[in-house]
Image (cartoon, rainbow, N blue to C red; front, side, top):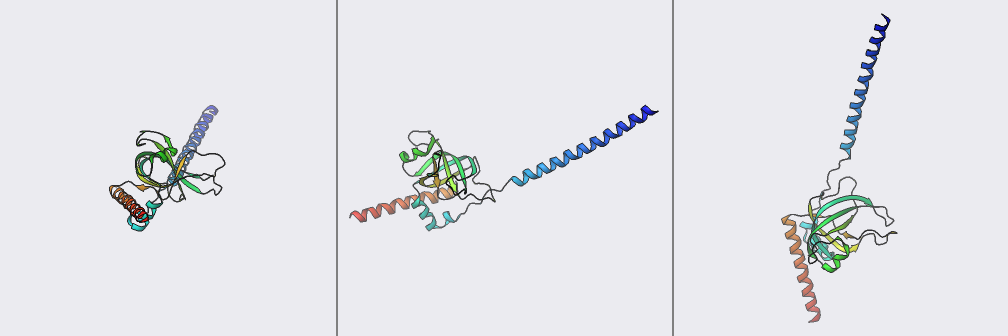
Length: 203
């Protein structure tokens, strides 16, 4: 009889231990899933003021040395190395079309050249200072946007030379037909204004 009792006890113990392991596994899985869910942040909203307000748009266009469209290949947050330790968004952009600026000047920031004539198909790094912690950088990868840059290289005072990157003045503008029409019209008006001022000065 004793061997039978030992076998019964062993089977009962195996059932109890197995049940506890399964329960712990399920709790751990739910906890990991909940933790991953909390890590997903919503994309940051784009402030339409710069597009809808005429003066804000003209001011941004006037301050921009380069304006171009491109597709976001990658975006990440990082802490600046200029001593301030503030967070910035760093975009890897596939260049589509240059709307304002000189191609020869832009070549300095191109990481991988595409077309030699238009630079279309090139990739470059673009930095936007002041990353927000409560939301994910927008636009997300595979989406296109309009980038307005003053032409300054970011992290110029860094201790170690960074990869060439452009500093942008505003958040990337989502590429829509309306936004593109507004920016193109503002670039055209800005050029005409400069031509008029130059003509009056030499008249």
